[in-house]
View 1: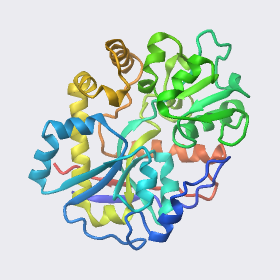
View 2 (view 1 turned 90 degrees about the vertical axis):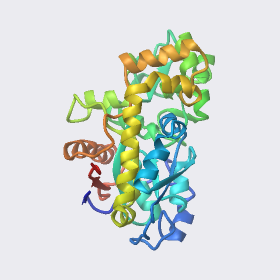
View 3 (view 1 turned 30 degrees about the horizontal axis):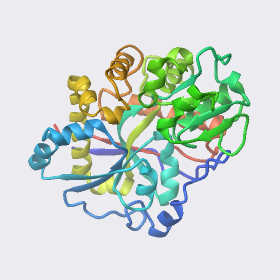
View 4 (view 1 turned 60 degrees about the vertical axis):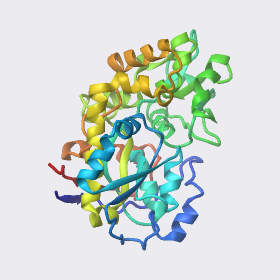
Length: 358
């Protein structure tokens, strides 16, 4: 197994239009690094990986079916996870070795921990869609100027749609002001706000707006296409690859990946098995963990499965980085610079290739 690094230390990511760096940055800076170690240094993991991620059904499947334990025993490596919707804060606060985060958040992570943060694995792409009420006069993002748009975060998917608004409409989509009224609320409430008329549109995840999508009280714009599909059609260099940009990649301090190549390789091997299980047992995984997909009825489950089959399945084929894929994923950073979501002098984050163990 070998590891090679590409890119350089990420610089400061500008706080664009009210998208401020999280308050945990202060504690992260005090600790000197994402895992509490001296910046640029890392200790031997000794066969233990501490990882933080949002609740994930595939991970539960690996655990509940004994796959994780079997692989851990064979490798002599253990992965300990904590579940949080604030993965950024947990990692930046020094409480995890590895975090699942969006590619375009990696420069911010590096800035928070004051040392290079390496992207070393991929997982799934941006599945968010733009939804409005049925019969709405709004046909695209530009039509929604001055209107109320609900989202679950001021960063993450909102950054991507903010870039689209700037490029396609010349408008600012941002928290705390701009050309839209951005409302940040719980992810489960987004579709309902549109259905009730309390918001004109939502940046919704399809699996967390199922009741409204099934009932027809939320209608997706752009033919229901995800942010990743819009990227491939309009902004990326490869229209055949709909895995950019990623909302979940595996990120760690570069020093940790370099110091612990066996642990990094095992984590990716485990997630590669997870992707294999998803392809082989997708429908059963959804029915086993409906809460992780926002499913509350057979109708919603059928809708989600049809969406995955006919519109968009956001899981990638493999966790491992490839040179062409990395080059295409990096295009998001130039797009961020062009649209003012990243300062011109901020360099691309590090992408570290971890070779499969077998």
